[in-house]
Length: 337
Image 1 (cartoon, rainbow, N blue to C red):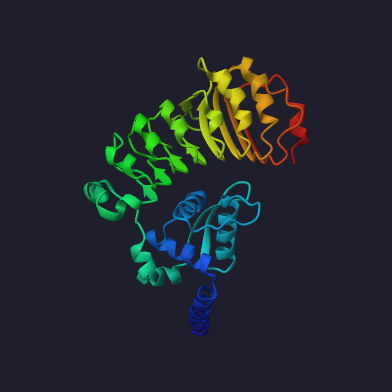
Image 2: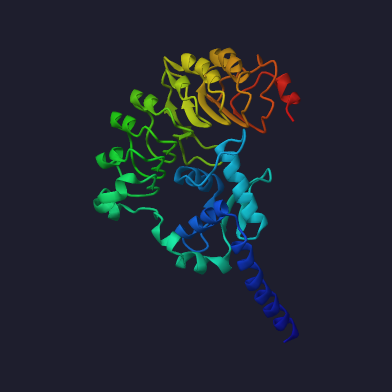
């Protein structure tokens, strides 16, 4: 009985303290916190998904020389430190990968008018009414795992769209009209069957995150399919994440050389690399001073990944994944911290 009373007292204290944490939030954190109410109770939210959503909704303010993603991550860390958001998953290198709303706050957030007015993840069943009235001003459209095989024509009419996720759908291609989404910042095609992008996609100059790949089912060494390299990719000057680009085609070497101009890149995934393109890749990597993570896969299992020609690695590089053969361990790897 004494133990039960102790636990009850603890819970009552938490119920008193946590609301104070919320009411003392600055305005920019309150809106980010209330946004979590669009997700179901106990739903585990991917950290980067949440960060991209906050940015697309316009909740993140410019702060000095920090990127919008860095500012958004500082918001999330502050909510975690205030015990309003809980860490749900940590990866092998200690990074917070998933989070969720604190149980004691979920009901309260659901009741707020702000939360009720926010867009919910849209099912296919809602597509017929999606494009009526003010919905044309939509900034975020998350159709992950919806029963889609083609991209509805109405979507490209959403001129203000900043975030489009088709993750896990059965879509096989994008039409050239995707170029009408001039304000798009995130295009998530992970887990779809898209292997080529129309050349018109190069008009999307605001893109910051381009994810186009799917994994095969051969575990634990699974196959990975990206999208065919397209010349002119250097025009994506705002790009921070690019995964995965296939470079074993006729224009592959040109594109590998262009990658060095994407100086804001933080995460880069390359697949089907040929040995003869190693020098061009090293030349590009030396220019990517902001790169945090690099994944390189060779075109064949026994193909050599030739990355010996890098004089020094990107100074902020934290993660390196190589799949293929190495003649020797590159000397620059020992220089990474």
